[in-house]
Image 1 (cartoon, rainbow, N blue to C red):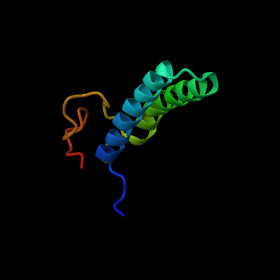
Image 2 (image 1 turned 30 degrees about the vertical axis):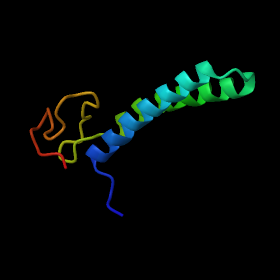
Image 3 (image 1 turned 180 degrees about the vertical axis):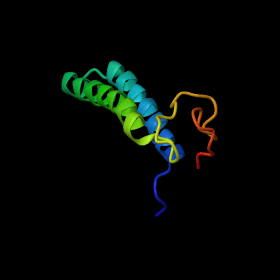
Image 4 (image 1 turned 30 degrees about the horizontal axis):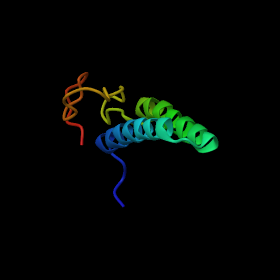
Length: 85
C-alpha cells in the first residue's frame, strides 16, 4: 500500500465531511429515537474529526505548513510553491 500523501489526506477530509453530513441528514428523517440519536451524533463526530485530520495530516512535505483543505488548487504549496504529490 502506498503511503498517505497530503492529497490523499485531503480526500479523506472531504469524505469525512460528506459522510458526516449524510449521517446527520439521515438521522433527521429516522423516526426511531435511539437510532436517530446515534446517527446524528456519529455524523457530528465525523464532521468534527475532519478538520482535526486536516490540521494534522494535510501538510506540505517541503515546508511542513498546513495546506488549505478547502482551497481550489492543491497541486502546489501556497507558501513555498513546491509541488505537492
